[in-house]
Structures are given as C-alpha cells and as structure tokens.
Length: 216
Image 1: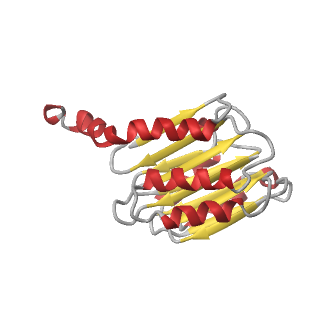
Image 2 (image 1 turned 45 degrees about the horizontal axis):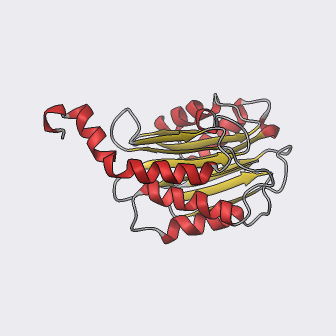
Image 3 (image 1 turned 60 degrees about the horizontal axis):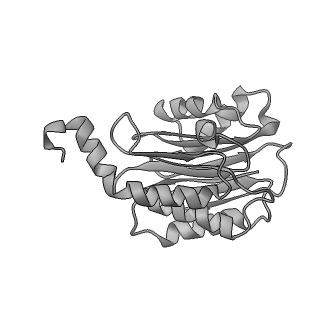
C-alpha cells in the first residue's frame, strides 16, 4: 500500500525521494537520503532501522547492489521488506521479500528507481519512472513530485492515500526540501500545493543557514 521513487540529479548531485501511502506518517518511516551518499527506501512492513543502515553501507563504499545485499542479510525478517537503494553513481537496486503483498513491481531508469506494493496495478512504478525521466530539465524535487503524481494517475493503490513526503538533500547536513502531509484526503495534491509554495524559497532558506548576512 505504498508507492515511491528515489532519484538523483547528475547536474547538482542532489538525491531525493517521494513517497505516498494510505497509512499515517510515511515521511518518518520510509525515505532516507544523505548528501553525497545516496538514498534508501524501506517499505511494506517498514523497518526504519534499515534506512540508516543502508546509508552507512553506501558511505563505506558499497555499491547499491552490495548495500542492498547486506541490508537483506542483516535482517531475519527480510521476507516482509521491500527495499530500494540508489548510490552516488546513480546505480539502483531493489528487493521484494517473499511475503510482500501484490500487486508489487519496480521500474529502474537512469538515476531513478520507482517501486510499490499493494498497488492497483503493476504499471504504477513504470509510470512514475517515465514521468521522472521526461522532466529532465526540472529540479530534482519537481521531477520526484511529477513521478508521484504519475503513479497516482496510473492507479496508485486501492485505498485512498493519506500521507506523502518529498525529501531532497544536496550539500548541507540538513535537507534542501523536506515536506510532509499527514491524514489528508488528497495527500498528493496537498503535497503539490505545499511544494509549489515552497519552491521559490528553497535556496533562500539555505542562504539563511550558511550565510545569514546575505539573506533577504
């Protein structure tokens, strides 16, 4: 009952994720991103401990495939997990545990991986990936947002989604974008509204942190 994507911008070095689901607080449980390192998703019977573990493996020099294999090997409950990893070179890897409920699917592309479980149909991740790739000229956050919207338009999941998150990191320890919606009847549309409002201020909030004398 979750569909999501992780992506990388080769121009800026940004990493990010966009996720939505029919349960509460998806932003605190599923996406994990680190500047210069990569991104990890942990979903289905979510184990948030696997996100930091995956990032630590990437930071140690593992590729996406190697980090994923180590994550799976490290948890005795891997049959319940659906995992995705994107490394600093844009390589992607995913895992579907044997007990992850259908419809489930994943779609890989250049610098992007989309996946989901308990989907309305198995074409949802492909639609997300294609929308991300088609928006190549846009900032990473916008590309991720379009991917999420395309997943919803392609059918999403059988139940209404009520929480959503848009997360992007760049150079600093804090996220460039970290927007969340919870318990909203149209969570993806609400995330779009918040992102459109936030987008003009993204760089200004960074300037306020790192060079306050230059802030507006």
